[in-house]
Length: 183
Length: 205
Image 1: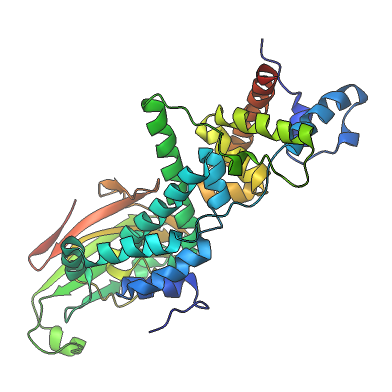
Image 2 (image 1 turned 30 degrees about the horizontal axis):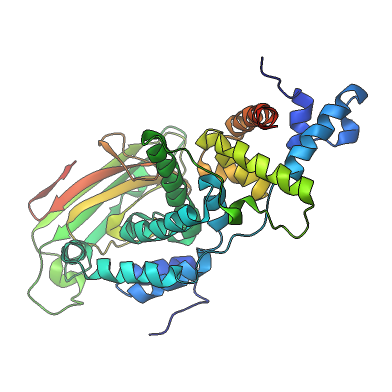
């Protein structure tokens, strides 16, 4: 049977659960790029982001029977990827390896719209983002990189809008401090 | 000492205020804050074109693994039937209380062909599993779990015995783990309850 690109997430998930494993490729194609930027900004590296996205898809397949709401597969996949990013961050901290925003694909040195000063500011901000806590970094990336509203972030992460704002406001202060240190 | 942004400047960064809304004395700080956001890199990130092939190779390998086959053997529908029996006077809420009482009827496997009708199975040995949730303000309560692919509307249930995770769905949207059963982390920050259903009986885990 061919792959059903037009099928809803719920239909695809049920088909996979019924044994049609090849249908899972539809979900991979549908969501592989949606959260790539989030993972890249969370982990500071394109390679690490790719590993995280791949692991998230495989883990989602393993746990598919636990997906309570197949129609909301994308949100569920996001939670898996988010946990994977947090775990990677903890693992690196345990091993004494800090995240490094050295990947040029992430730091964006060749942004066509940027002059030298803008590029340097982007680099400085990327370096500062690495030093935020994972929770602060997450809310900053979702709001200011992905362009989501607090209400949308709350729906994705399960946190309240008030706690997200508090986290973000601390992140603003911490970024200001870090950017001054870096300059 | 840490130099923090003024609360109004933070609201500016949140998009709730514009630079012109700030008192003149804060506009310099506001402009500095906006420069910070102006440095945010929002360029799309492209992953390797090989990602899909790598994921699907791993998925196919796992789908063929013996452990997964055993698991599928436990949870796949066979000529066994679980029936969902709702007790309307308990499920539908009143001003005083609403609760879900769900009885799962597990019949033994039949040696007959697949797709046998419920009538043939009805007289078989049965196990009743009753789920109860006290929810005084709920208008409706359903139970969903691995036995019905988490479909709150699935009735009758079509999954077989084995270990199942489940949760209640209150008013169609609020997921609640069974307070009468130990919870298990579903791996994604939420709690499910566990029940083991066999032809000999059922017990919470």
